[in-house]
Image (cartoon, one colour):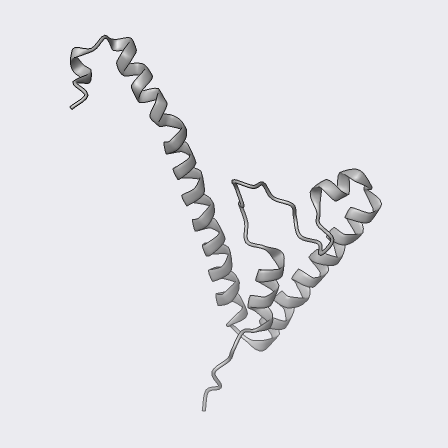
Length: 117
């Protein structure tokens, strides 16, 4: 209905370029959501191997959180920009690239096991 082929090429270029930001936003939001889901799924599968793997995953993520809290304290203002008070990495408003460390720790800690008979 816009009859873009009858308009000058510069008009078509502007029309197509106006779509670019929304397409890029959609791409990055979808990509980040997929990466978060994959992170959680892989943690769940790894923790499901055995109770030792589950315990090891929870311990690993606890140590990461403690390390981030220490880095936040020792780096001063720069550390406060990078990590929150719980040890989570501060991510952007529009892009949350990875799953939260606390969520990943909880996935490992709350893994249920089916005992073979």
